[in-house]
Length: 303
Image 1 (cartoon, rainbow, N blue to C red):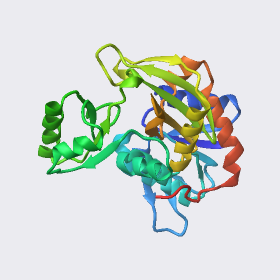
Image 2 (cartoon, helix red, strand yellow; image 1 turned 90 degrees about the vertical axis):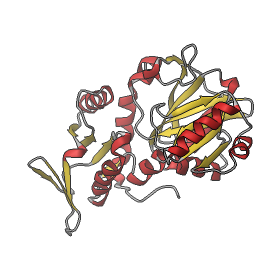
Image 3 (cartoon, helix red, strand yellow; image 1 turned 120 degrees about the vertical axis):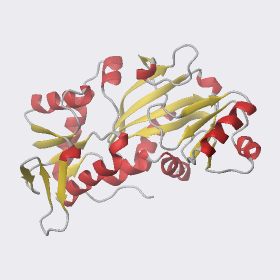
Image 4 (cartoon, rainbow, N blue to C red; image 1 turned 180 degrees about the vertical axis):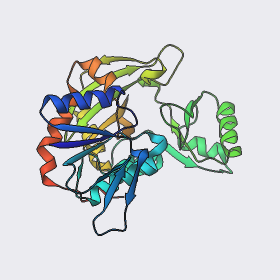
């Protein structure tokens, strides 16, 4: 099989592991920097130009998007062009866009009756106290809508602190979310790695002392964890709601069951592979090999 990986650098751990796994299974693989592509979208034969090359519909059998959040708009346009060329994408462009929009993704999860923390969305609220009441008061978590990887996420422990942060975000003319703080999670979350309709691996990420964000690059510690059937079911349903075939679903363990924080369409492989000892990259390649022949590029999910 001929596989294209859309990634900024070959040396990135996840990209390198996908290349190794594909080559080990006898597939040819090419890493393409999507920002250096341009597209012919008006032709009756759509194509993608990369450096001095032109890729047509018969150049690749499948594409794996590894698109950074800051270049989502252009990255998904390149994925969409591959879809127009009838190339199978392990995650379709619309699904990536859904998951990258915090508000849109939470609304879609809510519509499917998938558990999420109590959440309010605002831009310039007149009744800040009423906004805080909607999420159960303080402590609460306030998130910039455009933030990624824990950036622009603030834990406000008192009403005064929450009002100050909200007023600051209003001054920036930014959209933001206010969410209830799940104290019983104890600064830990679960990363469930979904491929197809199965959770193939899971780890717990524990925030360091004095920190509530459990991101590994912020000092979080990853350990192997056993999921409950409800947690597995929630992770798979969240992936389906987004229309994603490969994703990382972040869950919180609360007193009322698992709650989805986020669905990540380009989850990193390093933390989960090292925590679980599993060949996650190989399982992704195996999934693609089983499904790429279908050439299914029709949009999945709704919204």
